[in-house]
Amino acid sequence: SDTELAEIYSFAIQLGRDAGAMLLNSLHRRRRDEAVGTGPEEETVLEEKLNAVDIVTETDREVEEFIHSAVATRYPSHAFIGEETYSSGSTKEYLVTDAPTWVIDPLDGTVNFTHSFVMFCVSIALVVRGKPVIGVIHAPLLNQLFSACKGKGAWLNETMRLPLLGKVGVGPIPRNAPSKCIFSCEWGKDRKDEPDGNLHRKVDSFVNMAAEVGARGGKGGMVHGVRSLGSATMDLAYTAMGAFDIWWEGGCWEWDVAAGTCLVQEAGGLLTTANPPEDSQTADIEDAKLGSRLYLAVRPACDNPGETAREGQ
Ligand code: IPD
Image (cartoon, rainbow, N blue to C red; front, side, top):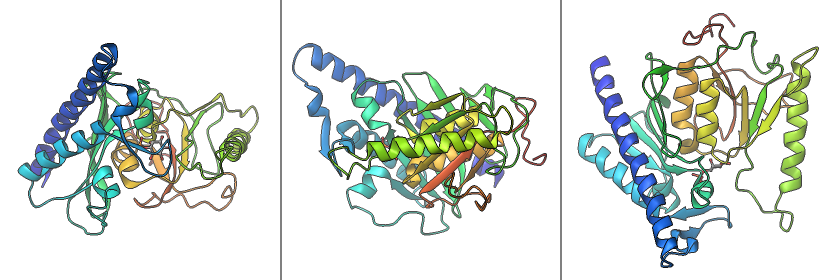
């Protein structure tokens, strides 16, 4: 019911706040330890999964445990899937049932976190019948808390409705991409083609996509900038905000995108699966399903901040 959902939403926001505070404490603790020479940065990294950029820190584990136990206490009948629970092999399931499921990334942007780069956050979503209905993203070093609940819009710090920017004139995607846009994409963690670590291939695909997106803006269409934050979750939050026009990544997991999906959709944007430029003529503009792996998010198209414009597209 609506009342139940509203109550879960408040709980999720508080959880996001607390988990974000834990991330910040852990960052300060590490800086203190480093200052007195007892905690070299390497000690925070517990494990490399695929390679040196696919890492788990003590903080990822602590924060996930905290969220898991809070959810289990308050909503014992709900299912839970977290990045660390899944990676450690404690569960092999994700989003398989229609039951309300919490989908969590305790620390998205782990590499950023270990370098004290601001773009890291906790991501908390409630997914019902495969659809994210609540999303909370807290980037504590930026003091930005994003939240969304089905039918209630998307918000920054609970007071500013998203999108913040009311740019005009975005048509249906992917055939008619916005011109003069900021295009954001991620490097992912696939570094298997050592020694160049896949980097050349990635750069090529970013450049091709940026050119394609610009070309679709029509006359004068040009990409204003290409960004890569190192956090798929933050990319989605900034797309919902209207700061980024398009975000693309192949190889994302549910916990990277679940909360961000709710934000983008509630702000009036679009999340779909497309692989520009390959799919430029054919890409399906249906909503992406969690588990798609490949995502393309497009910022809300609206003249007035705060008003969704999907009907008008
Ligand atoms: C990763 C980050 C990264 C993206 C990867 C994600 P993590 O999450 O969001 O930007 O490229 O696909 O898995 O490991 O920092 O939680």
